[in-house]
Length: 380
Ligand code: TRP
Image (cartoon, helix red, strand yellow):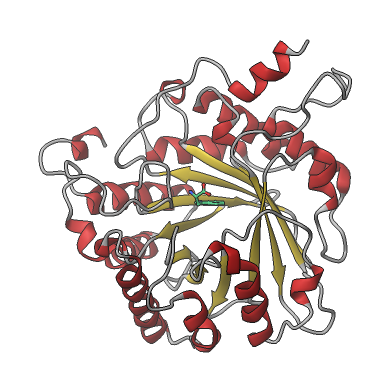
């Protein structure tokens, strides 16, 4: 693994090495693993052959160190986790967002041709998210769910602020309406921004249209009041997840004494729509950027393990996944575990998702203290 870092190591080599080892953790066959390594190389385009000694191909905020790849593991009770990989297929176009988006779109169409799925939903909203002169911070990302059989599930992530952050709400409302979800926008909870709009493409049991919302300063009480899906997720479990990941223990301080909210990088919620009859979402995901609330990845891993265990999920698979991605000791950096998410989708068992950075370019050093917690302690 370390050998890949020396000499002429390429981004594609590092990323496919990580992916190959992760595929083993996820129980994928050798044939599927080889196929998915090839898919990842193709998704990265010319960037796959870029030496790691050069700077990242773009300033993408897909990951903190601008790696255009991030992995995630979706855990279900009593099962081997599913593996997914998020990529910026236009990354070879660098920070030219218009070209980055066009290249991303070409990559999605190539996948559609190859795996025989329709891009109809995407075609209907393309002009809203990929205008001639798009604004940041992203153009198009793609996540692949690496299923047994060698054909991935495809998810496309678009930027509601492409026409300006001030028009993001309007863009989301219009996109939902064009996809038949005319009442959906009005069902969303209040938020301070729309980071992503996403579509499932191809072969899904119930393809989702997903709206992501940003919630600076979110408190546990607010986090449990955000879901609009029916049936509503269990509040206790949701609160426990949020408090565990954000290190906001219940009851040890009075409300006046502690902030009891996430004062660093904001939590996100995701509301997914799978039918147009009710106008209500059928899914709710709470994403907590755990990397901002820990000193190092040893702590992030402990939080992840606590959440997995309390949800009857296999935390040993997480440890294998972390070793598959990097040989570095977890205490030596922060950001390997980027987000932890609790996923509720109608008709499906609860899921926990762990987002694991590639750290192709940089590992952030551990911090001495977590500033948001200091402030709380200083008040005592
Ligand atoms: N890196 C970005 C962020 O921190 C985008 C992102 C990557 C993201 N993976 C994610 C957002 C998982 C939510 C969940 O926001």
